[in-house]
Image (tube, rainbow, N blue to C red; front, side):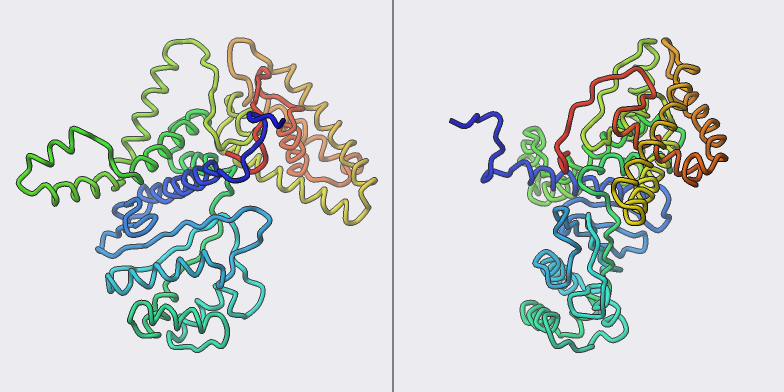
Length: 411
């Protein structure tokens, strides 16, 4: 008899639906942070005609749809059902609200197909229609434009003009990196918030605020108030839309309030164990616990990717056995420097991660000068191997602590 608790359901995938909801909210959090730095943006409105509406100060809007695809399914193509549904929605909005949309954004957790000049290449289709809204197609895009024109009772030219406004953006984070992506953006825009652990909590608070704004309010007191109003329907609509709005003031309130709570906890003088929200990598959790700054954690992730690229090059050039031998040699050399730096900077009473990192950097800079010993690797590559060792729990920037295992691709 199968173990009910130990088996995933193959039919009830509400967990996947919740993950996509959370991912969409994370995209909203990333979008609303632009309110801090882009002068012509006014408000983010959640789940209002679109996944997100961005109101500009000139009164026009940017419509944003978020599309997700499981890793391994490849990039989105223009004839994929998800993309066609987005086009259908964008055209319907353009017909219903003419001249109100400055552009549309198709935000995705994967790339868009861009291999050749064909009708499955959405970027090519957009460029062609931007040059001529009445440009003709012969394949799947011809049918799509015909169908959209008939369904909305509009001209093919209007369909072409709408599609030409679309900006596909496949640079949004992967499922497992959503919270880290919000935190990195907060860290860049608000460096005064402090340690990365605090930035992560601000990111989690902002994500939860977007989730709340994306759902209809459930408040019995408000409902009773509507009944007593002279125009309960209008008041209800105003309240719902107001609940969906994220202004610059709302955004700052979330960040400032969260930071004040964190400062109050820190003032108690106790070392509070870090309880990281879902969506953080092991490397981020470990370095943040050591008190390492947001910029240093950001570059550590980039350096890890650089080291992984070197390993792929070694495999292609020398074969798997030689690549493994080289990796083991460099890994031991790097971990030895990390161990010495750990012992030199270790502190029982305070976070020592930043001091340890500075010591590791100094040591690896010297090690990189002996290029034959590290197979010609540069200083940045060696730091990437430190990131790999951190991810694999061979290097710690604080006292070791338990990190729950999360299945691949899960939040």
